[in-house]
Amino acid sequence: MSDTTTLKKEDVLEALKEVYDPEIPVNVVDLGLVYDCHVEGGDVNVKMTLTFPGCGMGPYIAQQAEWRIAEIEEVEDVEVEMVYEPPWSPDLISEEGKAALGLD
Image 1 (spheres, rainbow, N blue to C red):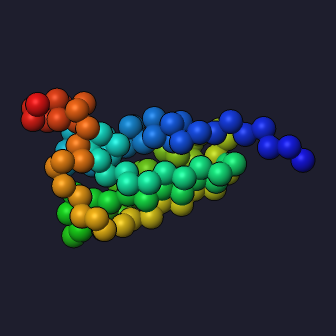
Image 2 (cartoon, rainbow, N blue to C red):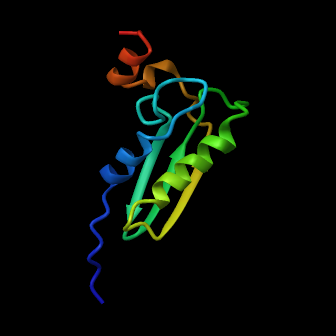
């Protein structure tokens, strides 16, 4: 059986650019909340964090990320794991994110 799945990490990250922290008008990728994205065949494992560990929106953001990734046609299984090491810092925000927040 040959694996013809063409799913790439870039596809997942592009989809995650549609997921937002409801309190911040910047997507989770440009905020620097996505620490790792591993794609193997149709399985996707994402490690992401929050702007602060006690953020009450954590489960909501993780669920939105999982749902959005699951919408990608080639995805068979999704795992979104929240991690808190290393702690998030504003230094992780992309140039696009900084511009959207007026930090440039």
